[in-house]
Length: 342
Image (cartoon, rainbow, N blue to C red; front, side, top):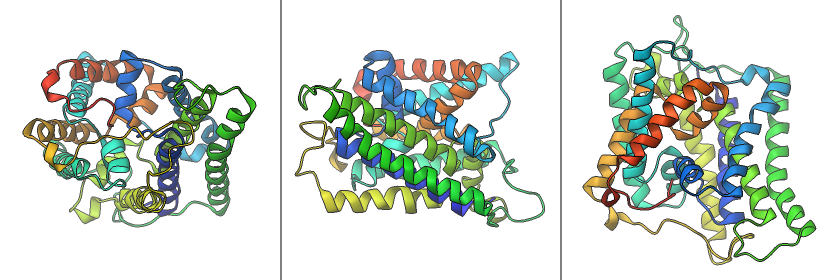
């Protein structure tokens, strides 16, 4: 069902996470890029980001258990396990060949008005939608009731709404303030030091905001994502994800346009942003985005939500993430445009 309050607040946290990482560390919040870094070139900052995502479960469990993400059962048969690994491999291959997924290309790339990312989004979104329609022809998902249209809005209780607002505001303020306090209370070794405490604290809070944003917006829920991909069947379409664009991407776009990149980020000497433009789009890039769209449309899971689900269901995580890594390893080096764009 349509969840305007929860999804809007979650989208705001997604904006805050990407903005915090951009203007404090000069980095793009790309989930698939982080997943590859943790294997190929792990740093304390990367570990801090994943630790922040893991911590996102705690405040929800303590204060808002009704918003905990509900996942499908863990595969218990060999065929189901193989399918899980294959889907992970499709996403891994696609995000490496296409240099991105929903976080880096859509959440961050569109906010930067990147034509390169716009092509990726314009490719993987319709491909995911077509895949969902072909593989799940009934289009029915667990998040839609059978007796009312799925676009019917539902609202949390007043107490839940207040708790959500307090949690979002507190987390956003802490992400802006605490890394500065950490930097002031420790001996920073200059902006060139990628392992400085201020940068690590920023990574931790960016991961926390990202994780909370995915949970609260319910982008972490495979069924919720698939219900959005059920468009244009209006009875079975959940429009909640439209609010991620409104409250996750648009605020970032406005902030970037207002602040610009003339002043370096707080904990870095420069912004480390992808330099690719429309001129760099080729068939390999489009193919990668399309393959990612297939993987995403099959189960409604992209890299960011996959990280969270791996924490909640380690067995599923080993299968999907193992497939993701193998899929990425199968990409010829000539296909890969840039490391860590998403």
